[in-house]
Image 1: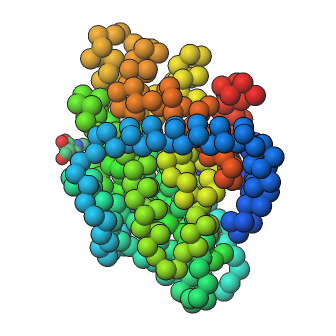
Image 2: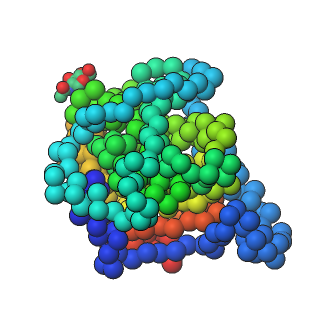
Image 3: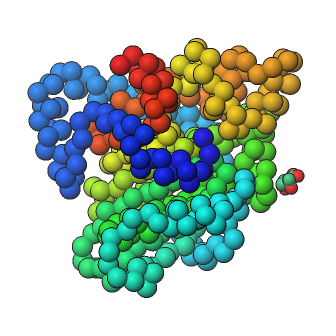
Length: 355
Ligand SMILES: *[C@@H]1O[C@H](CO)[C@@H](O)[C@H](O)[C@H]1NC(C)=O
């Protein structure tokens, strides 16, 4: 599902179902309720923790398997992007107005109170090895107090700048609000086919993981950077995102326990379930040229479940098997997780999880 302000409005409306999973352990990182639950569970909790860390280390092994040479993390200042690249029609004036109406704390002239930081994190060699980061926060807030963080991730074909209205809303409430360009998006793209080109190249060569995984690696590096900052409450780093950004939030939390609160919006799904139940069309349509190339390479007349399965296992190994949502989502417990999905997607998810 792509960036579409109407969907964002719908996210806030009653026609969407909010499904709350596992125990919510909010409250300044004390996790008191969770501790009690874990203690009561005893031996079972230990077995659960072991299987969580097993899946996590297997997932990290896959993420590390196709990495260019790593470099020590360095930070470079950057300039705000004036005309961010969209690899789809950019939002219309009306859509921008709707996004800008996102409710904010009433604290006077917000524009004057906000401070924007732009920077690049150098994380690895290669043309994608530089992670562009945008941070919005209040200028004149209590410098002594460490602030909570919300990382808000963009959808397919858009960019970190498209998240600015949401970053402003969080910043107005005292959060340090952060967005990044995903791999092959925004400043990491050169034209309107960069993301699709990268997906096709990954299918052809098997050398990169442009769908979800490489960006998850970036988000681990982002967490490394956040731990170096003095102004951040490290026990209160939340991560959220829309669609592709929701998938990034989900898998970043699987890979890295420093993400303490996790809210994927229309991102969590069952990749295996979709193949087995012939419900893969929506996901395939969002990156169709990739599947067309794979279909042709496999000598098929139409995209079918075999094409879908082969593409996932080549460009995102494990996505439709051991790292799929029934196995990876439980590794987020006992951290707080809120999954927001549309009605139909929610129905599919519940069937997939046999709930
Ligand atoms: C986009 O850039 C790539 C790499 O420079 C190039 O191969 C491709 O033809 C370009 N596509 C378009 C639509 O300009």
